Image 1 (cartoon, rainbow, N blue to C red):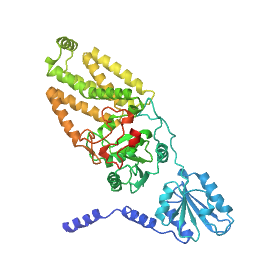
Image 2: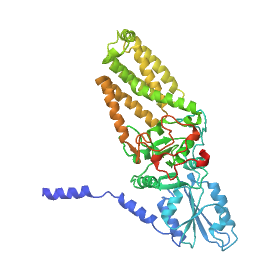
Image 3: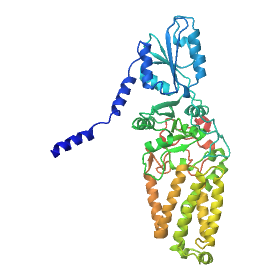
Length: 516
């Protein structure tokens, strides 16, 4: 008896919930149907798919062709279409038509009229902002462009600020982003292909590359990764980046983020691939190397000497961010003989009344600095800088007066935190800030020897990383033929080679005559 009850309970548990797969299967079968000869059947199918009239922004406009009296039905989504365009370019000409044999393409005064044969095509076009027209007695439908998605206008870049050069930034509308790139590359070989990456939301990714430059294997690799994604929805590039990156647990990013169309354009002209999406005011650049995260647009907009000076300052700031706190801990705790006698006495005098070890002081202030930085980012804009400055001054002064922190530790931590702001890329900035804490712990446990060991392991780790088949430290390690734009840039007229690690179809940026 007990076994029988157990089997019955198991059957109840294994019973499939009503409405999940069956609903999806019925929806798929409805969408795969062809356009019917009877216009009434087509109207019923579209109403069923879009849940009309419960779905309030789905609109249906019925009318008749002026000369032939054929019945016409126009479906569109009012919140993402330009209703005035539908009225002026479609409904008006259809009602006023005086030629019985005129086709729909001859009646409608608009561009890009698409022929549709299945309900799936109808649904896809309506979801992208197009209007769909059904005509009585025809086994096909017609879609024309009238999309009007709302979004911001083109504004200045917020994260990648430059002194010289263009100020435009990407917006959340992919059409605007495409136009910003095509404004800079007037080339018929600039390809903008689309891949649908989600099953429910039908989100599309635009893959941009220059056909006669980009490596075909690299383009196919990226396309296959996007096509193999099996998710319900990916709403923006920030989420997509986490699906396509090679090492999700890696400290360093393998995809470059940029909100500047001029920077994305420069990578396209080198043979890289760019990804764009709706709802994303940025682009993803593939593949990416460590040097691309380190560089900024200003490096080339400034003159040769000024640009290299900026890179020198940035490289020095990066090393200060990572090492200064750890070196202070290691030297004062384990290697005090390396400090000059006068400086050692000054440090000892400032720490005379402090009851905590140097490691705890540095760790406490580093955590406090990160808390202040995070608080400044999350509060409203007018209050952010005030909280950062006032909070740091008050906490630092109070900690010194309470003999919890020594004054020299305040200087070291402030220098470490401020230099981290010179790294403009968000992903690399986070990586360096986390690595700084790892070096602090290694210095607190083993001194300079611990820092050295961790640094060597970090270099080995960096050489093992790849971004879509490209070594992360290329073209320095391994060595590839390139223009020499790694740590320092060259004079612009001498940067005449594209990156060899991309294996582009054309290595030279200029002809031999132009180089001479």
